Image (cartoon, rainbow, N blue to C red; front, side, top):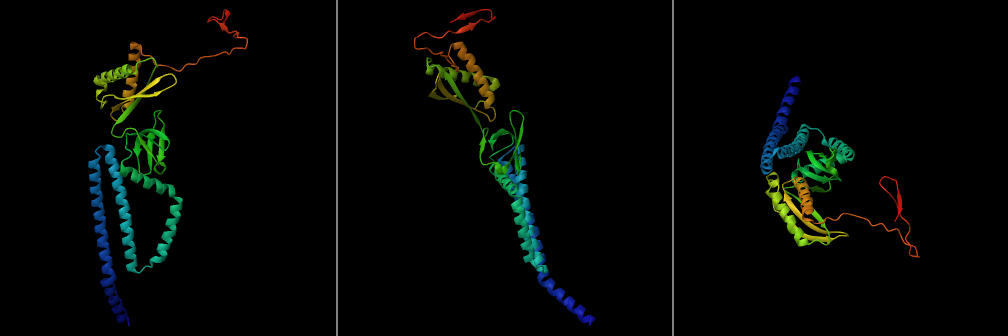
Length: 304
């Protein structure tokens, strides 16, 4: 009886090895090949992305994207391969899949914002809409991008405050330093001024600024004169802009404004400023009310 038991055991073992065991070996080999292929493909993706966007921040971006793609592909491949092996061993997968489905549903409800942040962050990195070093405005805050992660973007504003914005909250990106920048001027002059003369003076100022070695490297094109933009309450608004290297538009704009003020003062071109006329009212008999004026020393009073 003992011999017959061992004979049946070895016979069944050989049958299992010839069927399910062989399939497990094949599944394991295919899984290892798939994982190796994923590794090579993500490495190739990293090299292509890194070559398209050279620079330290872009290399870090490529590493992040490659690691995300690699990890997701590995999890999917191992999950599929593991379930196939368990099925060959004889494990009933229906209760396991049901439990996994309920667990995934519970985790999904509890981590909706996290999943949204990660998915949004992946596409932000992939589309290259925000880079480290850009000045952007997202989710109602603006500043210099210090770090772009899969879940958050870190900004530092002009006052030094750090803002950490979840990627899921980014529905619109305003990038002020993508490739190049413009500084827009709205120059107001008095109505009595000759606007053609003023525009010629502005072009001269911009040409002198562009010829200055301190600022020449940051100015990409001469001043673009857009013309008379509007007639305001007390000024004629002339609009123009200057193209600069990314993040240099404010530096160039401040220097240009300084030179505009000095040149306009030297040439007698009036820059209007807000002012108010006080009217004291007048009674029906035509006599204005008395206005008492106190001197600087407070020693005398007069009537105007």
